[in-house]
View 1 (cartoon, rainbow, N blue to C red):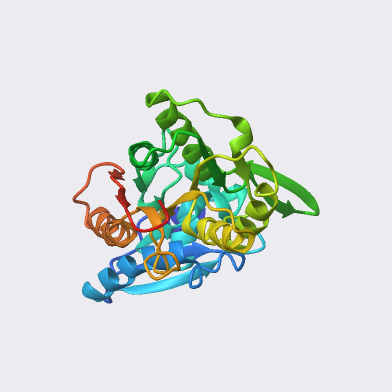
View 2: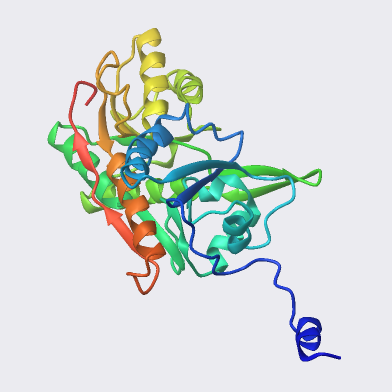
Length: 310
């Protein structure tokens, strides 16, 4: 048998090439999501995309929106190779599928980047806002305004998935970080806090903000002010207050495009989402070109934007 034929038999056939040949076209970036996470209608995602899309265009790159398949991916490398990607962005990595969260938590990959929900030991690139700093600013402002009974309206504690007819729940890190950050900020100001002043919605939506606040306002022992897990919850809470005639000070989180024009204009903690989106693309470009030696983790300082609601 000829030596070339023997080599062909003995050499294992790789299912996915780890280093695809250099393309003649510009870089291609993927954004992994699911139909349930409508990134073009979510104000949070639109904020990130307002930085991601112009940066990709500036480098004459291409972007693909990937829907999570019915059969989960077996590796991060499979995602890049199957879709012919140079880099992958995952904007809500804890919300897409438990298998994706597991891959991100256990795999090292320099051309994958996740946004927010930081957990210790990640070996992929990440950009995230300093939640503790944002909550500290919110509490300091409320105390300065004379409010000392401060509560919170936040999102769900867990996210539910249905896999093979079985319901699985996984912790929602965003909620945990914001609740813990607010409690630390209250303790730092030596304020008493009450578990009864912390209320959870089934989703981070305006509808849930309205529903939870409408029921909460019927109670006698109310806080003087609340911090909300995002702006949409805050909008719903404010609508419920307007209908009931009761008013609490309200601070949101994100500073989405409606916050400034809402009636009344919303005081909120601004995440620099557009900047985070631009930097996310830039980090992946540098990783693709090999100018970075290890995954990058970049933290951003949010800023309190004071308007009319607090």
